[in-house]
Length: 523
Image (cartoon, rainbow, N blue to C red; front, top):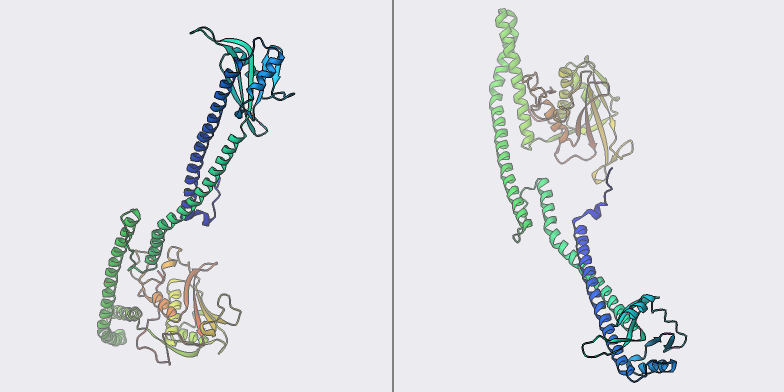
């Protein structure tokens, strides 16, 4: 059975600390108050009870000696009246009995507080007995004592048969107890208020470093590895802050080493590519000449010449791709925008490579979809995706170009930064092959990625899709790889067509001298 979860606001550390303080303070305050109240109540009632019993017994001892025995009704009435002649007897109610005689301080008083058990105790004992009776929320002290005759020295007193009962209300004592209860309640509320205040202060003191730790970890997670915490004190939180600082410092040093190694590797690849470019150009020229004469050579020699020519072409393509990637890594890649007809540009890309007969086109009409893009980079993007479909997919390969709509924008365009209209061009390249393994989809745009580790050599350089992604990103667009519902890989490029040029853009149609080769590299 799933346990219900508290709202997030109630699961916070601050709430738990405050609730904990309140619970501890409540238990301590209530327990202390209850014990104090019990002891105080017992003391108040015991003191009053002892004073009343002592005075009652003394009064009986003083008055009883002056009356004859056995008493008649008149003597018993007079005895009760004499007992009441004291300043402490203002609230007393007296009942004296002797056999069938009965005398009371208040005529017709039923003395309901005098229970049969108390009467039996008085009849059977020579000591004074008492009990407290609560009725209608009022506490009453009931005292009963037999009147005894003193015997010879050392002998037990003899019962006279006269029984005297005293009923005294304890309103004053109850008032003291009620006042004490009220004081305890007020003290409990004050203690709870102080507990809440202390809980808030304590939680603030505890949560401050915790929040600092949370901000620091988030900052580190966002890549700001120079984040450090100020360590105060020597408690567990201080140790945790110190550990976090050490971890961040170690991580920063490791990342710096990785960046230096990566920079050296990229610089090495760029330098090697640049150094190889000139001799490769000479080799390509030689292989072109040899290719032209291969028909006149012996068969083995012609095969070797053609193999050298193919490998030289691949090596030249790899060097060009490495140089293109180096420009992206160095931040030296710029856009040279020009207002072009996108459909015509796609058609020229396919025509220049002889793919018009092997690729199915779904393009808008002439001049229906125009935009400011870098023609050379758009050519690389389209050529790489189509080459990837042709080399690693299967027929039919389809290229579709259409106008897209930004999310949340009405058809026909959205609103871009500065209030300008934003249009989108979507290029979709689909093939009829087996598609891309799901495990490889997140990595297809990584450099030199191959889903099959055993396949270490392919016709492409392994950089074509990476160069495609960089060119699309330079335009501010996105590229996405997926598998179609009917099979086959689907690459979708979304290019924004803003009216304003992006920051990296440079007006004009002059392209860079070097660019990515038109081929792809599906892993």
